Image (tube, rainbow, N blue to C red):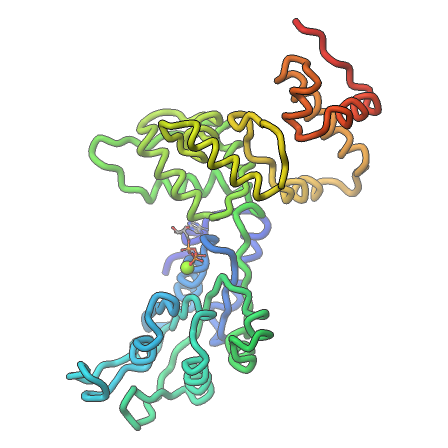
Length: 359
Ligand SMILES: Nc1ncnc2c1ncn2[C@@H]1O[C@H](COP(=O)(O)OP(=O)(O)OP(=O)(O)O)[C@@H](O)[C@H]1O
Ligand SMILES: [Mg+2]
């Protein structure tokens, strides 16, 4: 049996908590519902639960979103010979294959209401009937479900049966986003590197401290999967080399395409949608902002802070940095900060920031 620690990389507080929960629930027979954003590692968690369950049978996974709903029923419950066109042999379904083991229903939120009723019946009676059959076949399975959808709201909208929801949600596990556990980024990079099989003339790159810092500050909307993509990209672009923070920013997080203008226009259009801001910002210099959860981690080290002083300090640092970048031109700095020129001047007065003299 692989230890939970080997399967799940990370020592951050939320990941330690996650591992504790897995350890507690794994040996029981309780149904587990794993929720979390895309790419956070829900499959990884399901595997860890099965590995630590010490159940003798296999873990059988079914992705409910990937199998067309007309086929999903016979996939899950199996079918008898002649039950539909093309069913020239009887076949066991995944419930039977998972006998003695774990049935992992991934993307359970995508299961239609008709099948939800059948799943509920199977959970209540611990027996199933194959499609076209009438025998009750006993099945001993441990159910683990996962979804990136908000099942609560699906229940409210009538898209997911409330009774089934309570059945599968005996033990909920929330997988944290990567941004909530960015201290794990360096360890995850190591794990991912160790899992990549290099081509013959490829050598693994190393990430220096600035690179890991840059990656820790990024907010990873695609979570660990996105991190894996970035590391794989680095293997292609920087085989055997040391990758710096600047390269993470310019070549990995944002893959440079030859026609820079087109890319900048696309990025600009996208950022307009986000903020409705105007002005001509130099996109080259726009690195990802620190994710707000970093402050949460940092705050954990203190009993109290002076919020107003900190916000003021952040303003001072960013205004001074903007002025430095634009060689002390107020309008340039205002553009870089997406502020009106007059607003910036007011702030500089209030914060007693002097306009640097050209050097
Ligand atoms: N803690 C972890 N340690 C090592 N690798 C991880 C960890 N978490 C996730 N990964 C890796 O990240 C990738 C995405 O993980 P996984 O497929 O489990 O995510 P998911 O939450 O199921 O995503 P989706 O919602 O898209 O199904 C995989 O390559 C997986 O190996
Ligand atoms: Mg998944």
